[in-house]
Length: 108
Image (cartoon, rainbow, N blue to C red; front, top):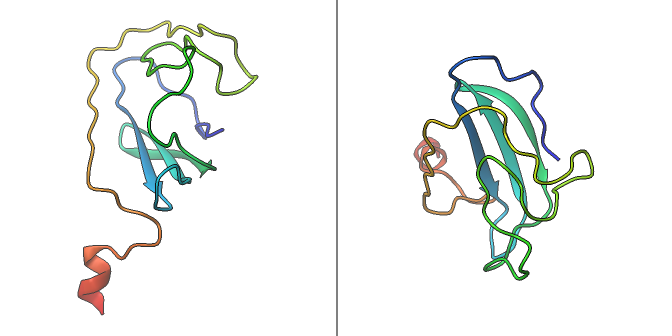
């Protein structure tokens, strides 16, 4: 489980999550949390969903978890007590921990 190293402040906040894959379908990788652009937590994710959710009790929830809890530290539906003003999902071409970035290639 990835947790923040400090609490989310009150008021308007920008939260972000970044995932860097090890590469390949269902592969694990590194997950990073950000609060207002500042790194707030990082951890290992052992594996990801290969294609789609295979059971009827899992979904892509925002603001609550209506399926199986990710950990035993909370109980569903674990509804957010605040208000989500906006949600942006940015997808990019897959970049894995084992691939060279364009800046790596320029340095060589």
